[in-house]
Length: 136
Image 1 (spheres, one colour):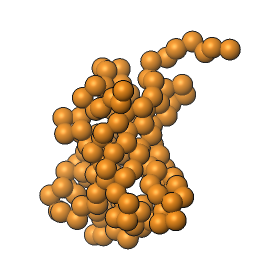
Image 2 (cartoon, helix red, strand yellow; image 1 turned 90 degrees about the horizontal axis):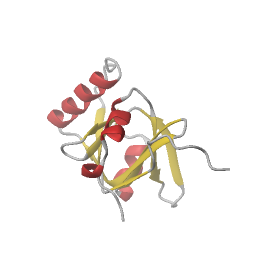
Image 3 (cartoon, helix red, strand yellow; image 1 turned 90 degrees about the vertical axis):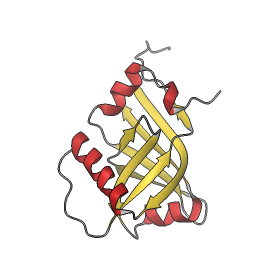
Image 4 (cartoon, rainbow, N blue to C red; image 1 turned 120 degrees about the vertical axis):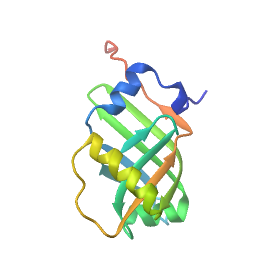
C-alpha cells in the first residue's frame, strides 16, 4: 500500500526538515531518466514538494512534457522518495512562497528574474528513515 505525505511519521518529518540536498528524477522526451541534485522544500500541510529553478532548463522541459517527478533525500541509511504529478508554475505569488520556504531551509536565494517553481503533489512516499540494524 502506498503511503502519502499525511502518513509521514514524526521521524520522517524531522528528516525532511534537516538541511540536505536531494535528487529530482524526471523523464526526458525519449523516456530516459534525468536525475539532478536539487535543494527542495516540503509543505506537509499541502502535501507538496517545491523546487525553485530557472525557466527553460531540462527539468522544466521534462515536467512540462511528462508531468511526473520524484524527489529523493538520502543521508546514510535513511532515505525517503516523494513521488507524484508535477507542474511548473510561473505565478509570482507561488514562486515567492517557494523562495521563502527555500530560504528558511537553506540560505538566501540568488537573484533570478527567470525563476519558476516546480510543484510536486506527493501521491506516494517510499523509504525507511528509521535506522535499522543491517542484515547480512
